[in-house]
Image (cartoon, rainbow, N blue to C red; front, side, top):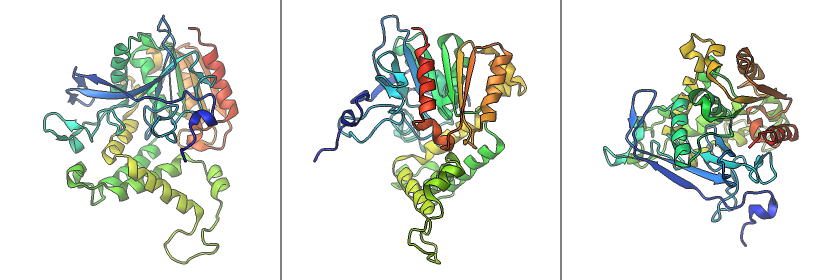
Length: 382
């Protein structure tokens, strides 16, 4: 029996999506000093670019997602885009009106050039030799993709979490090439606590005996144990305590304590499941680099820590969205950005939603959240 298609379940789906690849031979000089001699960017598009090329919206993804933003794959109808509840005909980001582009950042493991790609200098996977990348590097690579697609100016750039940091950076790196920046569940820089969470996750990976200094590809192994622990640590921080209590409580898998170290509580089972699943598809070298990109992001660093001075370059209008239950990127961090933008007399709208989902709330279908995004996009003139 064939799996049901997304179009059967959701008449507003973009339908079958097709991954595309853009190759660049021009070297990319990275912020850290290294240079990629050439690279590929995986991307998908939904909707149609209008004649004026004024309706393009760039979607930037967070840590473990990809360019597969919406729809499904014809040969894998259960593989639904990570923001499919937001992007599609008649949805908040309406593909009847906008030409939506989802890109996979460099350093990822989903089609763009990354640590598992072949290093042209050696003929082997880059592995540990792949350079550390930054949010600024991703924006530069996305700018080159926009050039290739003939898009001079985006109607908007949107993202959540790490994707939102890219949306913010776009307004700073290329202020004349973006009209609206939609920054969701983000911060202008990580707190020391957040950096600490990332470091513990990296240590779990790097101390795995199968890591081999990052050159595990040639050994034919994967640092599965480290990836599992890294994902478990991360997942705990993405969900609010309220949501975790409601979902799992203190329910026991076996009905009573086992007085051993097997799975007792439902939440333990869930974390192990998430860790196992993550380690089966995500690359450890990618995880190290993406978390470092999170750590390094700080637009105010070159301005003596003055965020208002850093955001003075921005010309776009902004929508900033936060969630009260998000304890990893709290609403206070979003309000820092709003204040800095208002200091520069920029047009900014701010939405703070009392939703229980924690940091992951930006991925969920909260009616207030989606209605607000639909209204914002509906007011963008093309």
